[in-house]
Length: 378
Image (cartoon, rainbow, N blue to C red; front, side):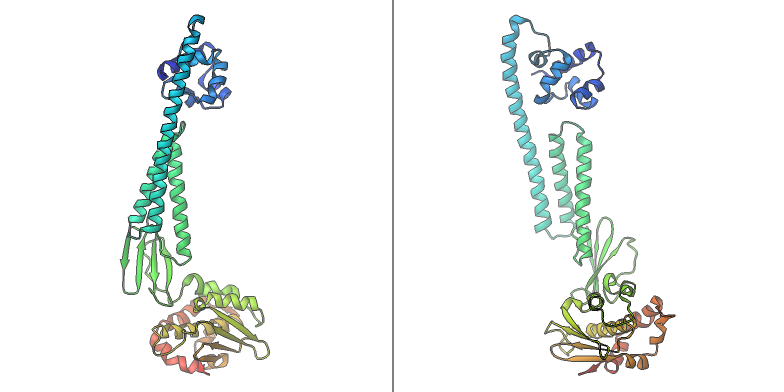
């Protein structure tokens, strides 16, 4: 089957019909570029278009496939020849499609392997890019029209979706997959991705959290607790004048440190208190607990946050399997001389809170010196 001859024949008959490539394309439901590719001999029309194309050009399918007008006496011979050529052409196209499908399958296989089984720095990212390039090549071979544009759109879209999924994982406190460099420090691990850095703070401790740095020059891990959950600006939505709203109290404590250990709570509406029962039996303050200081910091932070957010709360009890602690609001006010600076004109002052609570709790001496005077063991 001579594609170049057929293409010239299509062009000649189109011109004889005084049609432009665009007009013929509109009649057949294809673009003028597709018509141009046919006429240049780069591609053959799809089998489904042979009949409507022949009709528009005023020729028979036999003549179209022959690339020339056919005399009556030669018609049968040409018909048989074109049938055999068409079968050969269709078989070759099927083989090509199988190869192209196999290429795409190889790309998918590399992608799955890279995402599920490769943990080496940078290897997953470059393996993913290579797999998308292989799939794009397979799509390029399969497409008849807009080959390059289709491949570019596929590559950018697929990579974008994977990067968004990776970012979603980071937001759920997981390390990013698409990293090209990992820097390990004493208290933090920095994962460098193509568009941002991810800082893993307080590594392998109860206070571990991830923060995203798009600027790449942010000071690493300056927060004691996960700022995406426990920073005062995130807690302001739980401000309430009165104790008694179970949903508000529950949501507040799900946002505060130590919630990862699981808990339930009770409200004492008579004496205006909150009882928090932590469910992890191995989690409480003792000499063998490496996270003892973190637990102390968390309990002070949680208590002060609760007292300023739920105005009429008078006491809080924290129950662990090994010990219980009680903290009274009046004791905090009398012993913690900065408490009155946290609320100005009935509104929580965020800068004062960060200065007199968050920053103070980072100081181990401050926590150790004040813990026993603020929280009484029961």
